Image 1: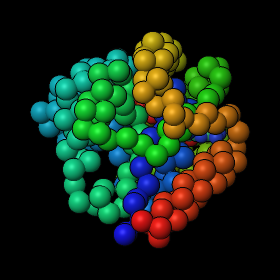
Image 2: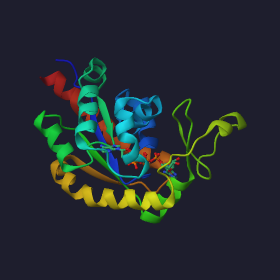
Image 3: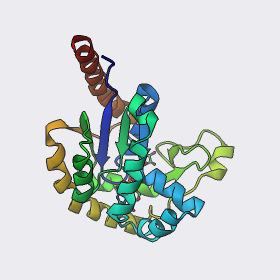
Image 4: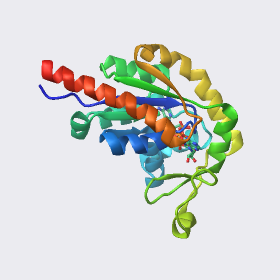
Length: 222
Ligand code: AP5
C-alpha cells in the first residue's frame, strides 16, 4: 500500500519559533503548512467577515473564538493536497475544545513537537520580529535582519507584538497548554527552542526522518 504522509503538530509559546521551524519543515518534507495565525492575518488584511470578527481578539492578544478557528482548520484539512502531502499544524489546537474537535474527527498527529524557550527570550523575539508582507518570511531586527534595503523598507510589525501584549499572550498560552498536552502525551517530544534555528531544525529533522522511515517500512509490510 502507499506510504502514509506525515502528520505533524508544532506548539510552543508566542515567538518560540513555530513559524520559523515550519518554513524549514515544509520545504524539506513537502507537508502542507497550516498556520491559524497566518490564515487569520490574511483574513484580516483581506477584510473578510471572518477577518473582521477575528481582528479585535488578535490585536488585543486574546484567542479568537473556537468555532471560527475550528471551522477554518477543518475546512483546510479536508482539501486534497493535505491527503497527498500530509499536514503540519501550527498554532492549533490551542484550547481543550479545539483538541476535542480534532479527536472527534479522529485527526491525530504522528508527533507533537513542543518548543521550549524561556519567557524573557520570548519577549525579545516578539518585540524584534518583522514580517515581509510580500513573501510571508519571518525576520528579526537583530537575530535575522533582512537581506537588503528593498526588503527592509517593506517589513511590517504585528500589532500584537508589543511587550505588554506579548505578556498577556504568554499568560493565555500558559493557562491553556496543560489541558491540551494530555491529549497528545503519547506522541509529544519537547525540544529546547532556545538555540540557533538550524540546531533546533536538525533535531526536528531527525525525528521526522525516522517517522517517515517507519511509515515506509509499514507500507512495504502491509
Ligand atoms: P500566532 O500567529 O499563532 O501567534 P503565536 O502563537 O503567538 O506565535 P507567533 O507567531 O508569535 O510565534 P512563532 O512561534 O511562530 O515564532 P516565529 O517563528 O515567528 O497567533 C496570533 C493570534 O491569532 C493569536 O494571538 C490569536 O488571537 C489568533 N489565533 C491563532 N491561532 C488560534 C487558535 N488556534 N485559536 C484561537 N485564536 C488563534 O519567531 C518569532 C521571532 O523570533 C522572529 O522574529 C524570528 O525571526 C525569531 N526566531 C525564531 N527562531 C529563533 C531562534 N532559534 N533563535 C533566535 N531567534 C529566533
